Figure 1 (tube, rainbow, N blue to C red):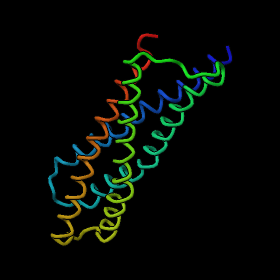
Figure 2: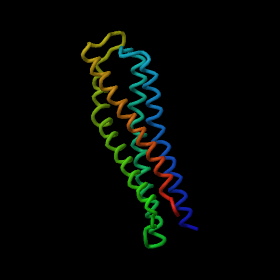
Figure 3: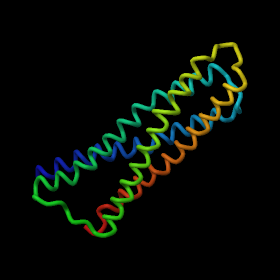
Figure 4: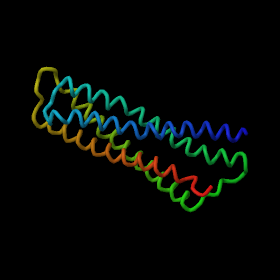
Length: 175
């Protein structure tokens, strides 16, 4: 009974993190697509809202991936704690775990690139922009090039998140 309670709690947090891992890039992508309607011309107020939103979502992404990872470790450890052995998985389940971990690893790599390289540079560039002034053409071009790179990475991250959701469904295959 206690094992089931711990498992259910871990699974609930794991599923919430799974949804968060998919929702964050999905909604970020929607925001970027909406902004894209205005082209690659700088609009201070609009671009400030977009940048503030995307930059402030970064900690949520990191929290979701950390909870996903920790609960993903906790679930098999829960079984081990009560039975002294890890649960045997069907070959399909084992392959699903490996693919899920590959997707999670891909998401972590992408987050590292975005949060440690692209976002700080975008923040630095944006700090040079002034309300009512058009930025230098080269700076504006770099700004939108970095944004396009971030968008492409977020699209890939969304695909990885979808992979995590799909592969999760196959982990208990045959049990």
